[in-house]
Length: 315
Image (cartoon, rainbow, N blue to C red; front, top):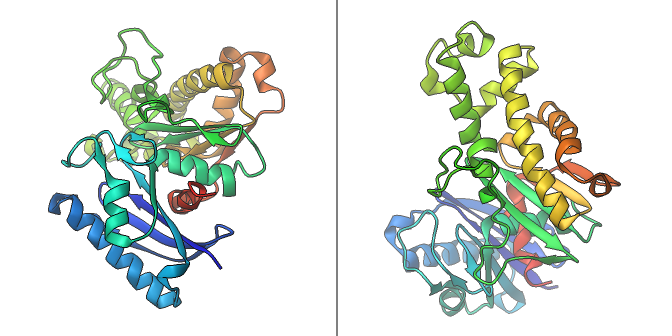
């Protein structure tokens, strides 16, 4: 039996799992990343956890065929990280080579959201399709694009950065420093920003009451929960966000024409109340032919998507 390792390297936590050749996770563990202790220390800690998991499953190193690591940043040729989004580490560093030296096992890298995308494409909501786009709706908006069963990562590893499609000329400021990005409107950050702006002038609603007037406690989930409870004020925000989601996804449909759109991440947990708005708005922004037989699904793999994506790099 052949085995693989999937690693989802996050800003706070790192998820590590051992998979069999069918992509089933046999054992997994989450550790604190502690990136501030340095790159080599972090990679050695990851390898130490992998060795422990191998011992627990009685798997010999000779049966390990590869380590796939999802990295928060653009990755070039599955080897070099152009820069790390969350870590103060070196730029243009060959993490594949470094981890290979530490572990003695072939190592491949990919952007963390791309890893989620290929995991969902192969084993999750996109299983059975050859083209899918995963839209990761969290603090920001990430994405991964699979066409003809191959990930589009681009010349410099920036392929799939759909959160920075421009939707509004000189619009709201995005965390990337530019204005009008998809991410500035449809992420959890965008939901919170819009809700706070509206709450500043309208406090006669369930959302304000649920927060006891403390806007600092506001999370995107609060908006969706209140909308589900029948709060018209919150539903207006859901419609606002859903409109921009429909616009961004509509643009992607017009360019890629995939079989499946997969929504993942915290905002996607809003479920049908958001999905229904997006499906309605898509009619306004996508060419009708791109909607023919299109499936829009919620991600199925949850926190395991990045780990499962690790094996896809070797298949």
